Image 1 (cartoon, chains in turn yellow, cyan):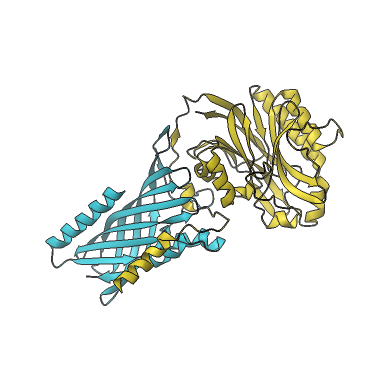
Image 2 (cartoon, one colour):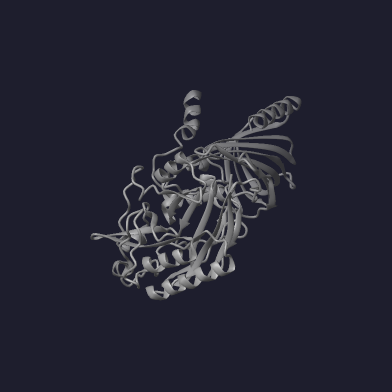
Length: 300
Length: 190
């Protein structure tokens, strides 16, 4: 009898790592006091900005806003290497009036890496942002709907200073509003750089994630197995600011957390946007209105 | 962590041996067990608050030498999700001001949040205050209490890090500035 009781008590301990795909972060992921991460001896440096943008429902307004923000960051910090914008930043994240039709109206085709971005049509989001990357000699990451045949993907694209698409990542872990918007999930495949997207920026190894991808057990495991220095994370998250960054602690890597702010239909985005170090300490950022957060990512 | 557990067990054994009239209580927090399984998303998010943020296998040992004062230690071991394993140990004392079942407590908990994939440990120590009531049912008891942390010291095995210290009324002050937790322990007195 005693043996059975002991086995029953220990059972949860033994079987506690389930096979479910979704990681539900606990309060312990964000608990504790911020640690001091000493990066003074780091040898690789990337100057980065995470942008928190108030999105209009009109695509052209958002593109103009992005261009203004890029110019402002470059003026304030001429040494900037990488600017990151949020998820599906060309419009509202979710339009309850016509979720799918609205997302389709914002989406564009995106060339596969390492192809160059064409120079026309001039009103294309990709063309306009690639021109800014080229003009300022910087990398730019942003989220947008991608049209592929009849399918729509929630994609994050990394544009290099030479106008090429260096990498693109398609969201794997869709949530209800993604599905309502007509997005198709990327297929989980370690051999597919569109679902497991790891790239190199100035010698720093970076993985790309979109919002709830961070909760995908398969993706988290693959990234941890490969090991990265930086997580480029575009989101549309309404959650308030954290004291500790759970994602940095999940990968023990730097994280750029680029988001949005303001009211979109029923949703109020708190504008949580930051850059955190591998210990989970937030170096720059918090809640707020439209702005950018600047930091130096320093890697050993 | 192992040394801390052994030290607590030895101290309790020695204390109990020295006072034959003392009461020893051994219990467990039943709500913590299912938390180490994969539950529905919202259960996984919110039930831990009602389980004193304990996960998985757990045991509580209390030692009451006189009606007004009791020492207590708790140990809990379990996965918080697929990537992290949590070990925690609590120690402190409970004071029964009315010589009955109502008490106030002062504890310290130390936890190790271990990232199983990167093999990095994040340790923290947090003092906390409790207020509770113990229902005695013959030799058995049900103990319910409210806990509130107020400060935290953290350190890690991650390279290039130094410890940090801060106020700790809530793990997520941006969401809720003060977050007390509830613990329910069922057990037997000896």
